Figure 1 (spheres, rainbow, N blue to C red):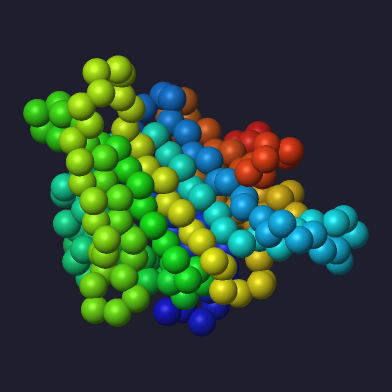
Figure 2: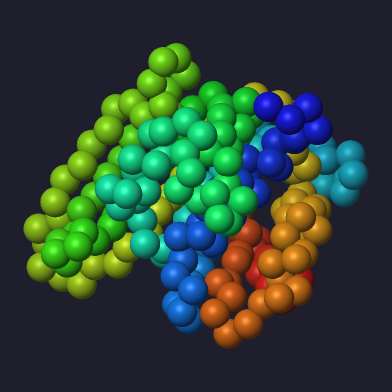
Length: 204
């Protein structure tokens, strides 16, 4: 694990994975970063505002979801599945350096057009994928694909409390992505879980 990484690194990893999951010709692509806080507030020394500590982050997208191909690639260390995009297959371990619990929920469509729901957690010992559940979705109503990465029980306290500071740092890290943006660039929003504050990174 890179020694220069921070609690922001797995969030960047999750956002980049969401970008990969959103198809290149998808005009309605979106990614949400949802900030979850402790119920006990404390003083943020940088902004002098009362802010509760961040205890978790959800990264939500409307990409293709964890298809069987994506799932099998994820379950293989040093997978070459994303090698052409610079993926080395060990980014998932970065999540567990900073969060005690990481779970995935996803809806995807198989080759025959049937929708499925898949969920699993990141293993801490010998298994990469644990507690996996995969079910066919039988509800007739219109379905949409996508994934949610739940990053829970943060270990390090080096993550800034203010959503504006986090937004600025995310834009700095993703600047190249925004610089080459076009009509298919997904909308990326960071917001508080209670919707009290939100920032659209594309506008920022």
